[in-house]
Length: 147
Image 1: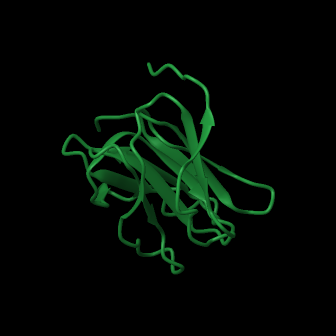
Image 2: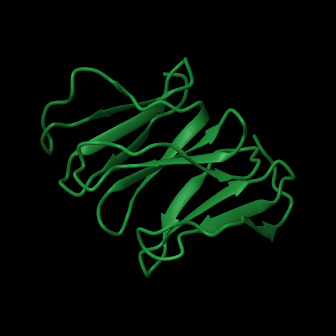
């Protein structure tokens, strides 16, 4: 893999690992049971990604992964309710100099932060838990350094 992995424990207690492969696609591997064995092969989730993925759990328990695309926008893919399949990639737009970071607000809405190519901190949030995102990125100002 070409970047550091992101690891998250799903609602069943199994670890799931996401990483960017040398061909710039998102790859995924997971435990079959909590504290148990793992899938044999990495699954290709597609995309055109750079950097380190961010993964977090939606209020309903599904996992959502955000990455910075080769176009520098933030892209999102999420588990479907069955937990067996994944949706398609959706662009959240923007132009970013570093990887997105995810967190969850007290009311269950996810919020994403990233440093824009203009070196300001920008963020976007779900309009309601498990719902769509705000239309635009909001600047929190500042002049952040990128390492």
